[in-house]
Length: 316
Ligand code: BDR
Ligand code: CA
Image 1 (tube, protein in one colour):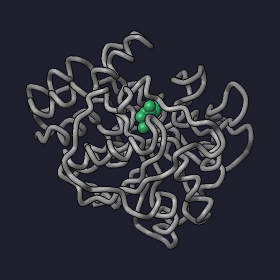
Image 2 (cartoon, helix red, strand yellow; image 1 turned 180 degrees about the horizontal axis):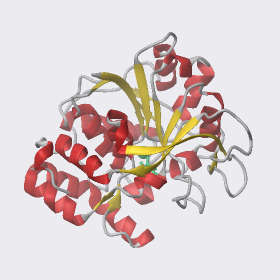
Image 3 (cartoon, protein in one colour; image 1 turned 45 degrees about the horizontal axis):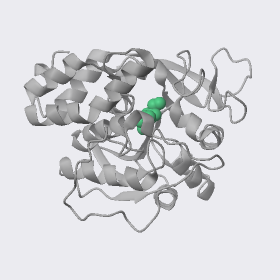
């Protein structure tokens, strides 16, 4: 089992990613840190706890993080994920579990105070990571892998023509992490996540394989599906975050190239990832940009874990 901390902002696709992460036999989830993003951080915490209860993983500690980006005014994505962050399903929760007393940035800074065998998968704006890095500049040297869902190389943005939401929401944090985290950032951007469309057919398929979980998936994705239709005339919804988890588990799912990458923090292009693929700036690579994805392998793994089914039975 590989040890990992998930930093997230649940969120519909974050919830799907958490369902995969906390149930995947390959992973040992050391903690979950929550950041403001899709929803205000308190709501993100609530949705994390809802997910852990549903997956019977209330043993995993949860740490509350930043309530606003480093410098900019916070803009949530409740237009995409619903006011409750879960497609306006308002599922209740019975457990009384709460967050740990330590805040997310302190937990991260202290966990990586010395070399560890722990990795981070970041599924939201990079505010918690940037704040942890300010407390502990050696953080990047003391972790195993750092996978970030965010940014885009060739694909158009989803918040502006050039920017993806996580990096657009807190461009200063993203820029800080790309500048200062002294390890390779594995960037799962829109180039690969746009290939991961959870279609109505797949949702029906899930209901056949596991009716209870399938119905839950249909309930929490309905709002997201409507949003995708209105926004881009896509039938289904793009589920970005679970790909970062699946790729962490099996790096053969995505391929790409190493490059120096910077993040724009000002102007109308804020949040844009400037990927110097052809080395104009002659700077050492700080990122691996994933550009191709094996969608069959992804859905095989993802659905088998979240539906509690045999991978061989999943035919997507
Ligand atoms: C990212 O933004 C959020 O809305 C999703 O949860 C995902 O992490 C995609 O741009
Ligand atoms: Ca997210």
